[in-house]
Length: 114
Image (cartoon, rainbow, N blue to C red; front, side, top):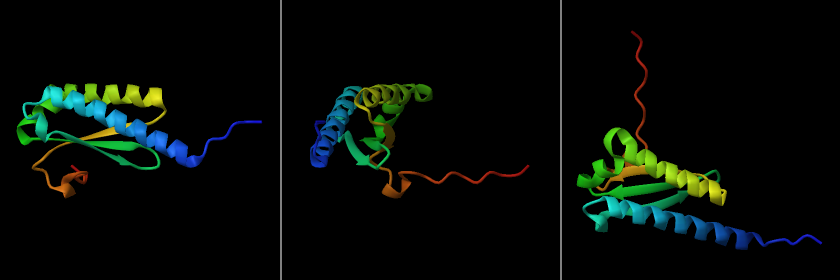
């Protein structure tokens, strides 16, 4: 007879995995910045993925993004590897503490005709 797992157990395991992944990312981000006490990682889970909202002080935003976005790309690669191993998808949203919440996902400008 196949063994079944209660949905609440699976949800609890997923929440633990997401919290653990967010804590790992926070440790990495805090190692990169000058004001580690201002760094936070907030997981926002949707049915398809978890967006990890990384917030750092205004002076540290450039350190987390890096030249030409290389540091941010590396963080995304690490989270992709963790997500792949754990069967989950992570996206990163990196922002400064001085950004307004409405700026979280800014609208793209409309294309112009030449």
